[in-house]
Amino acid sequence: MASRKARALVSEFLGSFTIAAAVVGSGIMAQNMTDDRAVMLLINDIGTVFGLAIAIAILSQIGVAHFNPIVTLWTFSRGKQTFVESIQLIVFQILGFVAGALITNYTFGGDAIQQSTQVRAGTGQLIGEVIASAGLIFVITAVTRSDVRGGVQVWVPIWIGAAMLFTSSSSFANPAFTFARSLTDSFTGIDASSVPGFILAQFVGLIIGGLLAMFVFQMKFKKPRIF
Image 1 (cartoon, helix red, strand yellow):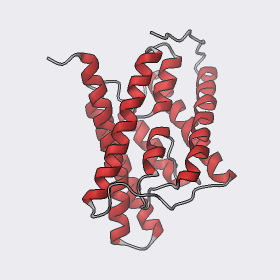
Image 2 (cartoon, helix red, strand yellow; image 1 turned 30 degrees about the vertical axis):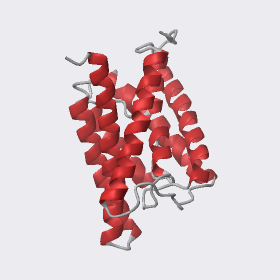
Image 3 (cartoon, one colour; image 1 turned 180 degrees about the vertical axis):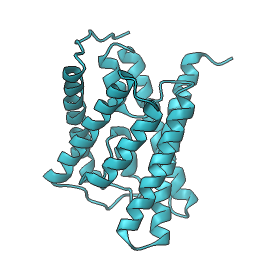
């Protein structure tokens, strides 16, 4: 019988794969259906929210259901897992997102590996990514430390879905998936030249969101564990 740790890592891969398929697939489907970018965004938003909700709700019963390196690092900073465990989770997240993007490209009749040509740059978009990422960390912390109904499987998809509509960057808020999106030349893609800036903004958002959460909820610093 597979160990709990192995099942948790596989679930992290499956959840990341599912989210990638939902986001990239709904984006390609939207492109095939309409030329109206507003309609494309709405279709992509719906696919993203539902895919994220399903992945968290089902796979949180097996593993940690982070599906995002900044969430994993935030959890690590709170002493809830070791550094080694965090790296393992992040590796499986990257593998899941990349596999999801490549396979989805192929199922829609394109090459599995593509080079995105969508440049996403500028101070405004980077600030948008900081806001989306900081909000994600704050929402997760708020939900887990309060009596709000629904849990993260409800409120995280709601935050991401809303942020896709009100942030200038359309809320990537995920370093692993940002890299994977550079491998799809579709509505949801990002040019490789824009990836470093987005990832840096996401880590800045992690720090800001974490500090805000610690202040608002009166949380103390905890010594991270390496092993």
